[in-house]
Amino acid sequence: MKNLNIIDKIKNKIFIQDYSKKPIIEGVKIFDIKRFFGEDGIFEEVTRINENGCLEVFPEFKLRQINRSKILAGAVKAWHIHYYQEDIWYIGPEDHMILGLWDLRENSLTKDLKMRIVMGATYSKLVYIPRGVAHGVVNISNKEGTIIYFVNNQFNFQDPDERRLPWDIIGTDFWQPEKG
Image 1 (spheres, rainbow, N blue to C red):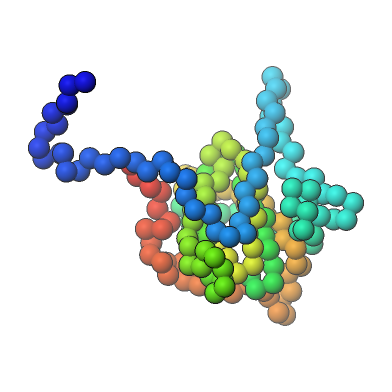
Image 2 (cartoon, rainbow, N blue to C red):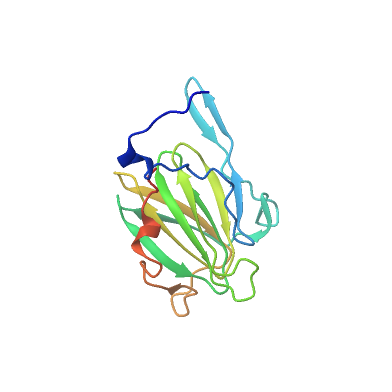
């Protein structure tokens, strides 16, 4: 194959995109939701709950509360962390957000690992977030979006299990969509 000559002023700006599998924070689980298409629309079974109140795809997770959050277009809602609670997030396929995760657990094998998960964008998934993993989201869509999240502790206004960190503690670039 003949070598292609590229103009000199551009050669040093060309790069190869990284398609390798990214590391996953210890304990984070991602479950793809099946979508069924018909002539009359789309159906998704988001989750099943067994007779013990546990989600079938995450059987150790006992559901205690379901919450809904509306995120304005372009808004960043971050960072927060739970000491006792786990979350399972669902963002519908019609929305487009980036879920940010940051492992703050001192004894974790993935301590200080940061990861981003594209949510929505024509796909549906559930993401299990263990306690001690800080999380937040940016709505990269030009319309408001909805997060449905399942938790295994009920919110207590007198003693909330929700600690906050500055949204930009690891830099504002974290919340920007990758360009490439």
